[in-house]
Every structure is written in structure tokens, then in C-alpha cells.
Amino acid sequence: MAYGVKIAKGDAYKRAALKRRHIRVRKHISGSPERPRLVVTRSNRHMVAQVIDDIAGHTLASASTLDVSIRGGEGDKSTQAKQVGALVAERAKAAGVEAVVFDRGGNQYAGRIAALADAAREAGLKF
Image 1 (cartoon, one colour):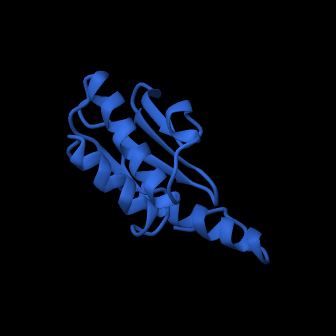
Image 2: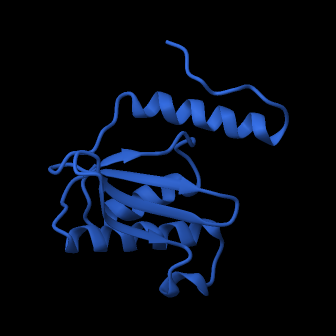
């Protein structure tokens, strides 16, 4: 099956490749009320994590490096990703979510993505 993501040059090619990988991952992953989807969005500076119920189309919890509690924090980007993972897990548990399906968003499961996931697991979310 072909996807409608155009091949471009330079940075646009990288964005298109990321989009293709995300589409490929999303073919197999969907969030339900019992196990919502933990989506990770990564940019060069920031990380955003959301817990989404795809059936209802609602975001149940979210956290980001732009949050007041994390924004001025010390440490490198991996440390901030760990803080985001712990914060989103805390907010998800407050919303009544115990287990999630992890959506890495087409990113490689390493570095900041893995740090966020490990911190969410340590905070009590089940993957």
C-alpha cells in the first residue's frame, strides 16, 4: 500500500521520512478507553507527551518541556525528557489511566524517547 508522502530534498526529506515511519507505526497502534495511546512528539528543543483515547478523540493527559514545572529546569534534554515522562505518568494516573500503548511517533526508540518511556514506567504506567 502506498502512502501520499512526497519525497523532497534536505530537511523536507527528513520530515517526509518521519511521517512515513509514523504512518507505518500507526497502522498497528490505536488507543482505546482501557489502554489509551501515549504519543511522543520530539523536536530539536522540546518534547511533548500526550495520553490520547482514539475512540473518543480526547486527550486525557499531557506534559511537555514547556510546562512551568520543567521549563526552567537544569540538565540536558534527556533529563528534561525524563521529567516529562514522570509528569505525564502522574497526570495519567490522576485521570484514571493504568496502562497505555506507546506510540514513538516514527522516532527511533533510543535517547530521549527511551528516557521518557523509562521514566513513565518507573512512575507506574504499564506499557
